[in-house]
Image (cartoon, rainbow, N blue to C red; front, top):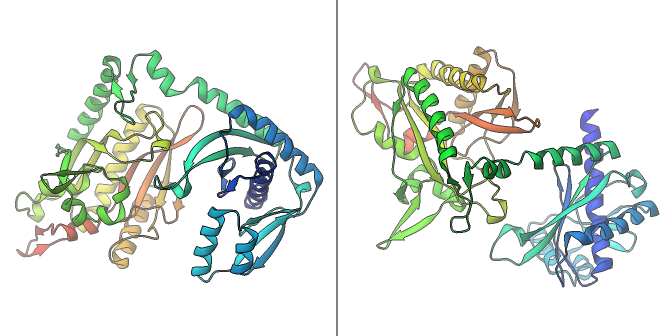
Length: 447
């Protein structure tokens, strides 16, 4: 029942995106259309406009959309040939680009007709606009967005809309946004003199003394728990040669998020994750099966390249410190070690009164390594969750490219959910970096 309701509202949101395109074309007949997908709580549509659009102009577009809703016209799907679609969208370069790709892939080309308007679309949509509640949607804001997310492409105007099944749901959501704005951590950070942001270093906070007091106390608290649990504190370099990430697989799976530098004709990267570098501490000396597990902890300074438009306070940044741990253990020790990490996470979250939810994130579409190792890793994580009597949900295909993970989510004061910790089981790194220990028979083992 819940899934059917969600499908229905998503159909309405998708249809509203088309109505938005119709309203924009009425105001700007020469506008070029991008794409208009459904997103959480609503929809958006991207346009190349002949002149800037201000947020104050959105009510006028919204009024046009409501008039279109009340007209009660239908959404009709039609499959057409590449030649016909090229004629339909002859003045729409972005649509022609998409049509060319669809045709090259030998996929059917479909459009949805709504009155005199037609849009390239797979659907689904509502049957008629009579299914849309005219009081349950609102245009929210405009933003800049590169066509297909690439800085090499034109900058388009993205118009965001909200849409729900009822006016009450819309009003409740808008009220929640007001509460979120009141409690915006960026505003609180400035008011409490914790941190600030400056254009000279976008996406990286400047921590003030009050903020550093909190950061240092958190490190002290967590560090004490880690030492008690047998972790060895480590620190690894911020700048590394690019060949490190070539070996780990990050260069082929994570390149767009790496900050690259050239030093004396050799390529380097700012450290984006602690995992590959920790392998050098483990392999720095010969390890016996009696030495395992080896638990390494690190408060590592990381830098990850994000699109500038996605940077948001402390939630999405270029530079941040990550409390990381890397446990090197035998296969027969996996369950005990995962249980130990779960216990540590629960202890920390309980201290701060955080409500915790668990998810098992499985193999993504683009993954590296032997599928059998993935099956083994996923089975081990399932067993650990079961042994610890933890209820969990499955996040299909949301694992890291090198291994599945347990995501530990928490809810904030406004009941928004955030992933605050992960437990990843990685069988790939030992093989890629030739990590091993000497077993009781004096032989090398890398599992």
